[in-house]
Image 1 (cartoon, rainbow, N blue to C red):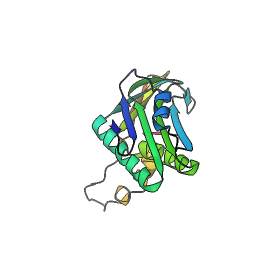
Image 2 (cartoon, rainbow, N blue to C red; image 1 turned 90 degrees about the horizontal axis):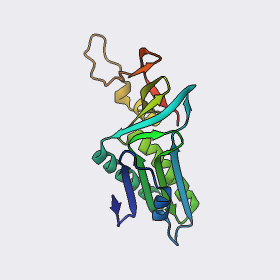
Image 3 (spheres, rainbow, N blue to C red; image 1 turned 180 degrees about the vertical axis):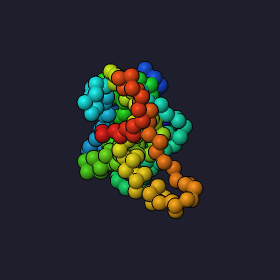
Length: 192
């Protein structure tokens, strides 16, 4: 999705479509942009001592695009930005490949650097894109640490119910994972 007014390019890429880093970097490039900052999130080979085979992403695409547009608007309201490009893959992303890429251009490096960090932090905390880590001996759906931190700051999420009262709070039920043929419940958090 391309917005000419604010010069944003937002793409949620179908399975087996790689992130074309040069395409997004070229999109934000301009003579008036003295700085281009990028973030490339790649699949690493280990997590907590487990061998990672690949990551798998799913998304509610219309809502994900709307939320990324909102993040772009917030960034533009805070920093002087020329252009923003955001791409996120869906489906399987093998070790070493890029799953998310953000490029931000601005006249000055401070605006580009700060906005790029804000963009990835907000994307991981608020955009409905879900990640499953596939290990050599199992798999687990992951909750991003940014999401969990944001959730823990919500007073409604931390409310204590009166004894005997029916709970109205949403509770993390954990994630089901199967590791070494043993099923367990775990709450996975992304350390990225």
